[in-house]
Length: 162
Image 1: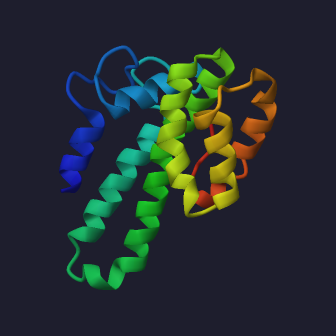
Image 2: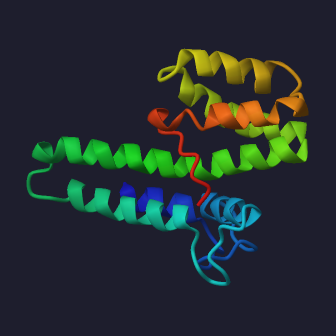
């Protein structure tokens, strides 16, 4: 199933590192990286996509091993790293749309990230729910919201803009 996960991440019509073609999450990640000047140039993958594809390969190797039951902790650790990397474009787009003051897009990315925060940091969950989902975002809060996002690394919410 990891091959299927990779196919669903990459999607159809995608060329390596291209942020103008493609339709799925690989493309979203390339676009998000480009918004922050983190794309690696023409035909080069963003750091997040490189990491995601490498982690999917690592997981496939672990799952296909002779004794995958003894590698549970290593497998789980890599899944956590994968989730963190998959959150990179969500965080990048959230920050971009906070800065661009685009309420509908901001709400979309806030709704994608906020539930992931609930189990790890209930106070942060309430903060983001109130600031970004239940209320109209106040652009004067931009610095505070970004600062609060940066506290979420333990929640597997990567704020590295790569």
